[in-house]
Image (cartoon, rainbow, N blue to C red; front, side, top):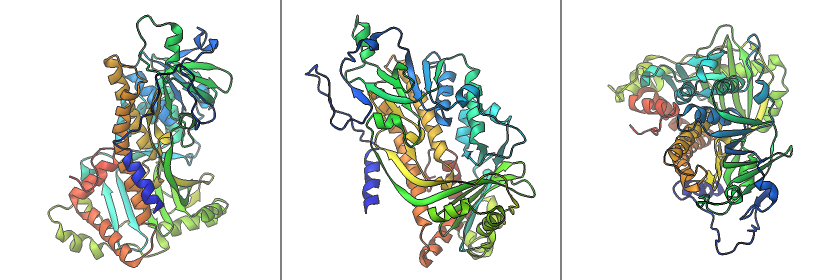
Length: 509
């Protein structure tokens, strides 16, 4: 019941953004009883240091220089209307100054992302994909998903939706380095602050300065950031791209809704006798296991299980772990699906002529794992959604705004969708002379992305719940859904298009 209430809270925020009510009849400093520690809100920013010409001023301060934050910087630097903006990037990660170390002969890092065609298009537009292609990556045009009961499976092929690929698996450090390389190529006013955000002061008065207003009045309408190394700076817009434990979100007083899944994910790199060109996912009683190609005979494992089992698998020796992976992918828990139960000749006869070409591709066993090629890592899984994405001078993107279950690999792609939307909104604001930190402009981004993100979160959360129950009748229904998706062309095309980053929801042609 509590999750139902929380879900309704999330949905209620799609088209009903809540704006803070402020009083304009009193010039005394504003005191908020529930203001988070570290945030200072006043009407005039009265201390003298704020009005010093020595304090840097930027159009945009991006807090968090990870993959999503760097993508936003690159996107803004690539657009004619925004490439003149002054950008500050605040992140203590030394890789922003030196670049991550990538050695060609090293095995793949276990931290990877499955990027969709929409994300690939974004990277091409901002000039980063050419750098990705200089390093190890793996396009895939086929995917097989099946249930441990042996009742059902689905095979997806890019050609079913008239696409060249379904996605590409890339190490996170390659994506990050490619974005850094792209940004270095661009003529943009940027400053990297290799430190952390300590506190933030936000204005409460309209950011529209009156003609002839003093410098102090102008600065009083900006956000002031105080960094952990003692540096202060001002910005028209502060972008929180600092992850699920966002300091920007905390300081802005933005609340979240969500829950823990009582599951953890174990990730690692494994090796095969030959190269893998297909993405595989098998739903097990405790959660799905995914095998994702990463190139050069390597694949990435993302295995969802209970926290206790995750701890045990993390310390398991290599031989036992490899045996456990092969057992989970193929030989254990239940039989392989039989194409004749619901597929090919029987089930597809109800849908002719609306069947896909891949329906004739029978179930294929996944490739054997022969070696563990990296350390194993484990992390807890949860769903989190910010009740607001935007407020005066502040906006959230990526994991700072939302986190999801990794079962479909959509988390980082949702963040890149935020980047595309926010870049367009900022460019539109610049085009008409709007203040880029004004909440009425930023709410356009919020409305756009909340709709898309909540829809994706609902789909992923529904899958997680549907495959967390081992119950006979429900198993039959899941099998029917798998096989229906396998043979019914309109449904399969819509699932592929939606997962590829297009806006159409599944089940809608």
